[in-house]
Image 1 (cartoon, one colour):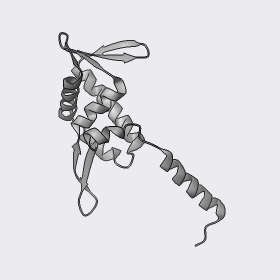
Image 2 (spheres, one colour):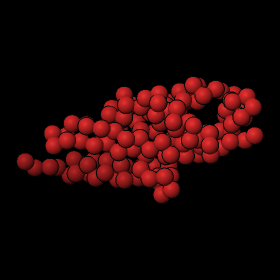
Image 3 (cartoon, rainbow, N blue to C red):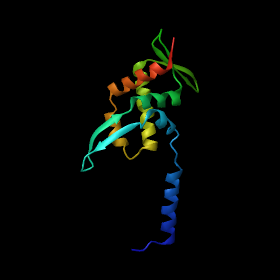
Length: 137
């Protein structure tokens, strides 16, 4: 089997493109640890997925810079079109969407294992952890 020069060049360029993709949220790993752990058995089947709720909270804080008002129990999210005020359930939904987008871009090899296992209980625990870090009275 021979490989011509154009195939080698294309393979080399693809490797360089992949090497240039830098996870802008990798710095969170230093403080919070890995964003998730996927465990597999001998047959490469997923046996369990562990989400780092502390990482999820830090990710959303860095990405969205939310504020929490304990009087109204609402989150304030600064955005392009002004400030959006949301409750905890909507905040969980936003977190799920942002995590899914992050996984698709930076962890495409495991996104199909992660998304179905991101439950409401994981999201609510992550949002509560985030609330404790950003609480404004």
